[in-house]
Length: 481
Length: 94
Image 1 (cartoon, chains in turn cyan, brown):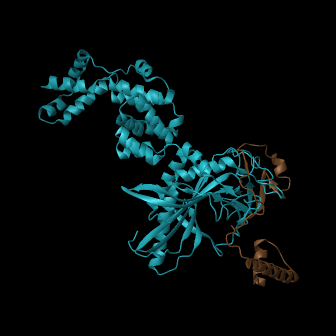
Image 2 (tube, one colour; image 1 turned 90 degrees about the vertical axis):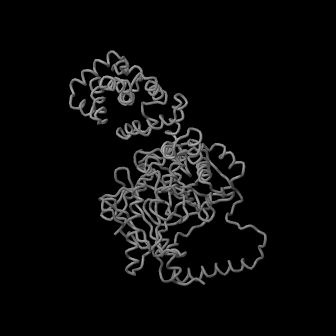
Image 3 (cartoon, chains in turn blue, brown; image 1 turned 90 degrees about the horizontal axis):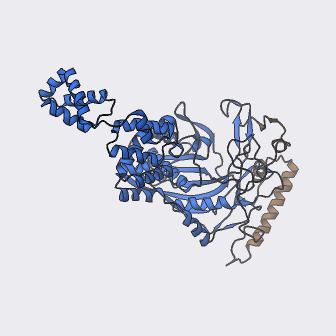
């Protein structure tokens, strides 16, 4: 990226709220039902149907607002946003225009050791649109499209950031932090693959030192946080090239193509503001009392920033560890439950970030669904601590616990993995290894310390990893001197 | 002042096709409404909060409880061209 321009990025994030029923009607929000099996006159936009606001959705939106440091507005209202699109049966979306529920929040991000606040302009409540299935590979090549309105009317919050991000990397950090906070509150599943979390990005460039914004481009079809970052990186380069050549940036929506790694123009925004918002006469204003806000605030869990600080302070974890452990609430809870039973936080953190994470990644499971419980992990670590098994053996025991959920002690017994700390038995093996490896013995005697490591390895191999490494070391040195 | 072009733009937004005669009538009607609004503007409303709703109610809620939806065939009863449980719609973009 050339140093001539400063990048300005703002993000709009849509998160589906985890209610059982839709925002304005009683239809189920469950994912995966038969098409149009969860619709009614309200969410199909039949004339004469009367929408009634779901109180839980307001609760969740307030909770999200508080978690993101917003001011919850006493007065807000719902407005109709008009546009024609087949996934919008009423030809308007119920949203909040000039009086949103939450304003002026912020999210703190950490990028390359720098801490920065990203402002949140507003959070408002609105209804989800239906889902289109195109007959061809994409919308342009399709002769027709199929509409499923099961998703139509599911409650959403739209979180609009300030244009405070200055790099695609900051945008990525903002998104991961935002997702983690929303997941902690539990107001949204935040599953990008099911579409319950989506992101559109606005990006513009301006000469370094300028305070005016350049012409912005909106990016769509960003299906993962990495896609957001990659699309922004591409767009940053594209716009810089245009500006270098003295060509204008066109204000437009561009579509990210994951396979080609490029953005391409979708349509020009001829009239930016023709949504013709007006108050929805079928809905009444929403008044949130201070008591209501405090009631929701009391339910807020400890959020990632506070947990991060506490994990560093209380458990003495390095910041790097703390940051990884608190990434999800389930993981942080698992950590605390394990430490309560085995009081060595750094060791617990090492095992969680190392072996356990590796097993989870390979099997595609989440920590909360896997067979390793805090009790079982604590037991395993105790076995290592009291010398019953070696660290190497512990890894294979963990694999077994992960696969079966069996008690580590039982696995150690069944597999005969208990460490050999019997000096007489080990002395025999050590002698045999020395006899079988004269070259290494020679090297060691000539001052090559590395050779000792090799000999230790041979003993471990002979004992299938069961020898107590400390004892092997001692015995080898003794016999070789 | 509402012009003929304003009327045509609004008609386009509403996907309405108007005859030449209707455009004329509507332009005059809408200008009459604007005039009425202008008269209302002359009233002193100092200290009166803005009114955005015709009814004086707020906070009408329902609990988050799932109610029966329409059966699929009922939901699709008015669809001109359903397919496999979906509403089939013509080509969206050219």
